[in-house]
Amino acid sequence: MELKRYISIIAILFLASTLNAQNDDDSVTFKMELSKDKLGINERLRVDFTMNKDGDNFSPPDFNGFRIVMGPSQSISSSWVNGVRSFSKTYSYTLAPTARGKFTISQATIDIDGTTYKSLPKEVEVTAAVDRPSGEKTIDDVADESLHLVAEISKTNPYLNEAVTVVYKLYASPHVDVTNFRALDNPRYNNFWSQDIPVTKYTIENTTYDGKPYRSVILKRVVLYPQREGELELEPLSLDVSLQVPTNKRDFFGGRVMAQANKTVSAGRRTLQVKPLPTEGKPAGFSGAVGEFDFFVTPSKTHLNASESLQTTVTIKGKGNLKLFEIPQLNLPSSLEVYDPEYTENIRTRLSGMEGEVVNSYTVVPTYRGKYPIPSISFSYFNPKTERYYTLNSEEAMINVLEGPTSGAITAEAPSIGSRQLVVAASDQFVFNKLTPNLTAISTRSFFGSTAFFMWWLLPLSLIPLAIIFGKRREAITSDVEGNKIKRANRLARKYLSAAKKAQGSKESFYVALEKALHNYLKAKLKIETSEFSKEKIATLLEEKKVDELTKDGFIGLLKSCEMARYSPSTEVQMQQDYDKASEVISQLDKQI
Image (cartoon, one colour):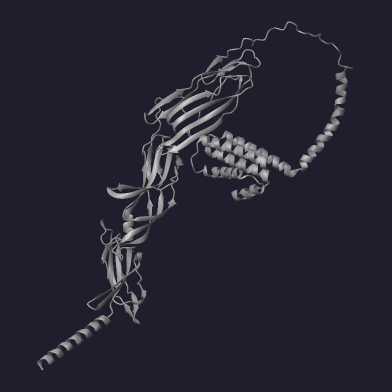
């Protein structure tokens, strides 16, 4: 009997505990948990809504006074321990305060088994910014610490027209993965002559940043030549970067769960202090060359016959601002026929600056037999490494014209050296006195009755047909209204192109005159009014006229150059190139339209 009573007591206790477990398991909890109830305005707040049973139709509260930085993120935990099931589901938000003060995070709701449950509201106090924000870092916090865009400048105090290299590097922590980036704002290098060095392949290097291990990649490289002395500011490069950031969550295998984030990074504004070129020791013929150069004047041949041609080249070779100074002019004797020089360049832009050569090639044609000197000319430059000026002088050469007509007393003036040089004449160059003068007697015939007298009488009659022809031609020209418009527009184009050539020292005046010349030329050729003048209209009309792509793109490019030149610095070399290009493009259009 005693044994049966004990067995009955144990069975009753087991049944009671089972019923109690079932009651506990049937109870539903839905609550809101805050990472902190007081935080600085520069900190982040994490809000978790947790339930012990799965539900539907979750409705978050109105986070008044906060901005949602991340969320909602959802996590579920389920386990069985000693036959008892444990379940938890959480909706998480990361919030950033928008103002100081006390704010109430109101109730959230969810439907569980047909019943709506509400969380209790909680109050949060937002204070002034704190020096060291505490609490759990958000994805934005990790991205801020793990990503940096830096502009590395080769020299912050260069001389005027000295090369400065700017390399933009993106530094990323090994814990994050950069998936993509795009430029939001490319810097405009005002008061600089700039040349981009394209990055054809992104190479990742292991390095350090602020004493910590990082990975770096070069995104952009540019070489700058300051065109003005004093304090010059470089605008920042800004990027929008997409990256994967580790979170505190783990996956099934224990690895960190990565989250997608976007961050805007900027290289920051940098300032250069540009030094003026020294005035002490500055040569009189200095034209702004800065770097290290060699200088040559080379004739293609020194022995030839009259009416043959030779090429004499003035070459500057080296490393420096090769596109930003003028080449010294070659001065030859006036008895030689010299054509305008043809400019060529072979320049490569590296991280250290421009390297290569610029050449002016003169075509020279002698007319008479004799010996003609090519006088020495000088070229000066400033070397920023030694901080000194240097002057190079070309070697004097002599041109021997072996065969051809002779001319008496030939002299040559070399204006560059300010003295007159006597040209050595050939042995048979003198003209001898004539032994037979072939003189004729002076006539004393009377004008009246002479042939000339009757010719003057007949002259008015012969002019009548000419006057009739001229009148009809004038009438035809006057009636040709369209043709007259074209002629006037052609004259205006020539006028403004001439004005552009005269205004090459002034950037604004030059490009205004050049643009007017292009306008009037097209009015003449395509018969359009100024109101119809747009780059799209011009491109369409040129295509209809079957103008080749190279000529069409050149003309449109000139119009763009005229627009851009008003907001960017231009040198006299650039203006000369634009002028030559305009002449070439107009010449090509004349052949095709």
